[in-house]
Length: 113
Image 1 (spheres, rainbow, N blue to C red):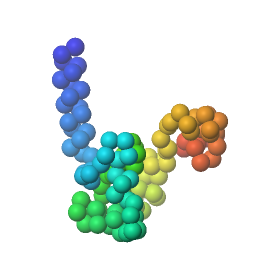
Image 2: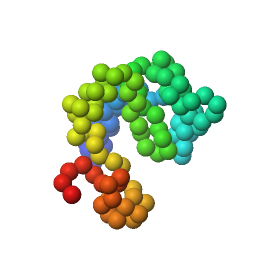
Image 3: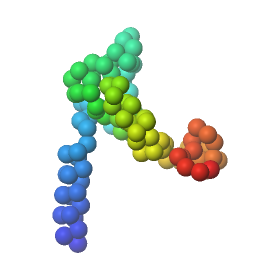
């Protein structure tokens, strides 16, 4: 059991090293949503965060981590070259119930019907 916990802690540390940086200032339940409100438009605020954290970083929208890509070449790589990796949607109880087991177009997962 001890070996398993050591292995899992090493695995988690390695995954965090490869992950893009997360913007600071997230609150427990709402994440970075409070940073996107106000008089300044959200794209300006995200641009300021890109200046601070680099061209690719993450923010939390609610409890979900969201990847922000602020370079057209990187966006093209994500949406054209690796579209299958980015084409899924998060699972949730509300989407399961209201989306009839994810069968509605907006809630469906990538793949055949």
